[in-house]
Image (cartoon, rainbow, N blue to C red; front, top):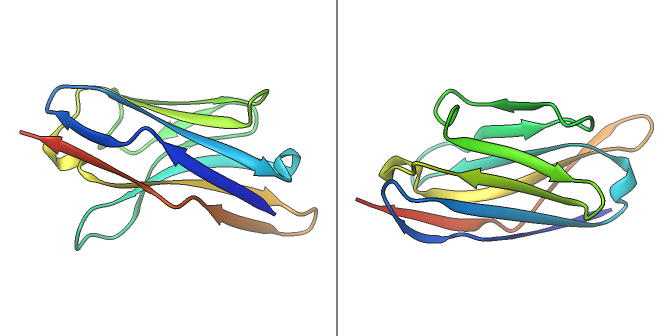
Length: 119
């Protein structure tokens, strides 16, 4: 089992920055990858950034060049640095961990944190 706790959300003006953190606990040694998802009201949840076990990032086009995902394996924490924020970035942001049991993968989720970007 893996527990994920996000922090760092809040209200920010357009053009500003926020950094989200996601601290993992439990069976963290079996985490293969992390991802950050977001869901705006009446929208589907979308994957915006992911990072592999060896630190390779990938981004959705909507955030590429503005957001940076990173992980600190010594702290079992993944971060999402969000720069040049836009009102359309307003959403609930959730951390995801892909856990490998040795034979199959399991997704674990944090509780989510609200990010609101004011124009």
